[in-house]
Image (cartoon, rainbow, N blue to C red; front, side):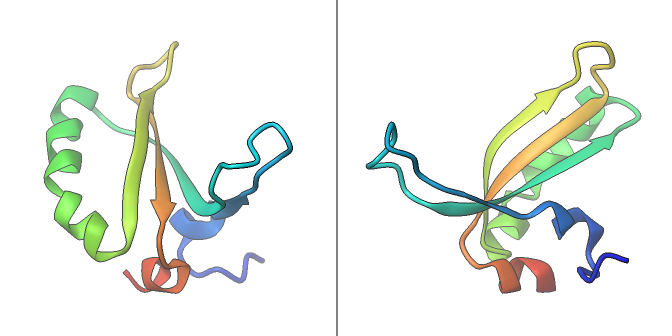
Length: 88
């Protein structure tokens, strides 16, 4: 059983630097994958929630769509404060 109560945040991982990217910052991120009924209708609502995302300490890095199914969505957020994001 996953100890994280919020399944969306269960995918939190830490990105680390390597010798190639010695100057790259270390940050934590969450990847959220889900399907929507209609991407073109869903996206404006997602964009409108940027205030809520920022309040949770989340910065959107990318939103991508599936090749075979354009209604399969993947969003990647950088997290400033993991506990804060979990509470949101």
